[in-house]
Amino acid sequence: MKRIVSALGKLIRPGRACTVFLLGATTVIALSAQTFTTLLSFDFRDGSSPDAPLVQGVDGNLYGTTSSGGIDGGTVFTITPSGALTTLYEFCFLGACPNGGYPAAPLALAAAGAFYGTTERNGGYDQGTVFKITPGGALTTLYSFCAQGECTDGAEPAAGLVQAADGNLYGTTFLGGANYAGTVFKITPSGALTSIHSFGSKESDGKFPYAGLVQAGDGDLYGTTWGGGANSVGTVFRITPSGALTTIHSFGSQPDDGQYPYAGLVEASDGSLYGTTFGGGAYAGGTVFKITPGGALTTLFSFDSGGGGAPVAGLVLGTDGNFYGTTGYFGSNQGTVFQITPGGTLTTLHTFCLESGCPDGADPLGGLVQATNGQFYGTTSTGGAASNCTTCGTIFSLSVGLGPFVKTLPHSGRVGQIVRILGTALTGATAVTLNGIPATFTFYSASEITATVPAGATTGTVEVTTPSGTLLSAGPFTVLP
Image (cartoon, rainbow, N blue to C red):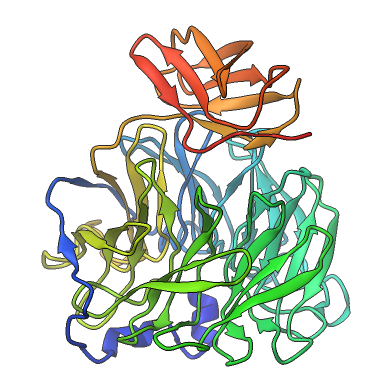
């Protein structure tokens, strides 16, 4: 992230010197019933500047990347929920590093249990890579960008990947493509890459997709571009797996509209998508917005320096139906964690750097993930309490009183398909149902069981009965025809 931001004239960092605006019309509420814990302060040798959110693995631990540190090309790491960190892989920092370097994006957990990710630079042509890494740390470079003339296949992927229902992984590159304004690509788990869209081919098309994609319930992929569009301040787009792209919103088109979305989107149960913009809004501090698949956009909240601002990260949908996110360094504020309801009521859960030296971290660029124990986990890009590096960043947890749940991997499947169910304290599970239909299952560990999609099942909630109670899936499992 920092490499691209620097190349764009430090577009994120000017938030540190933004004007301090008066508190907006929407009240920001401070909530006191949480438990915030700094689990780890990076010390550069074990990584530095974790700019991406974490992802939970099948073993119940969390996995992530640092964009620098290690031997200075960044790292892939795993950390237990209690804070024990293991460095799985260290990228080198020289341009001749074939395995890539500077991973600023999150990892994607694929159905087979391995992780897929991207690096912004290095690789065979110094324009970034796609890689696969096992939970044990065995890394395979699947693709080096700019393998085609003039980088028509893309360059410098700043975002992570998503595994779609067809089993392929989809992602974006910030640069490269036919117009050198970025691409959308598809890559098979074995590494065969196809560029399915090049941005910048027309005025209304977006440019420079900084964020990854999400596959919505309609089967299409949705994402954002940092620039381009009718007003040159970014877009929201829909693209089919075959590459037919439609710009569904150009930012800056309506009063108090946001500008420059760095983050991707999250789909809610109502079928709408929710996201953030880094700038714009009523007070120039960024926004939280809701958009329908048809393109009807509503600005839910406009940030100002009084309650944080300039969100680089996107939102995560909590099991309570609310959204959770982070704001970055804006004005005199060095970042916050917030909760926002689908109707737009925002509550500040934690403000970073209230103590001298920012031992709890600062500038949480990566956003959050809710683990199956109910707690949220996140990273800060700077700050920390390591004696030899107080600006290397942190990993933290935040409990807001939500209980444990289960999640499925993947989120959809056909009758007869075996699906992983991830959770916490699954030992002794006695029953699994899908929308009320019993399913056969196999216990593997306290964090993983597998189940077969039963005949007669329809789309709905997965329930796992354990000695301590019944655990529900965070969202519906889709039964495919």
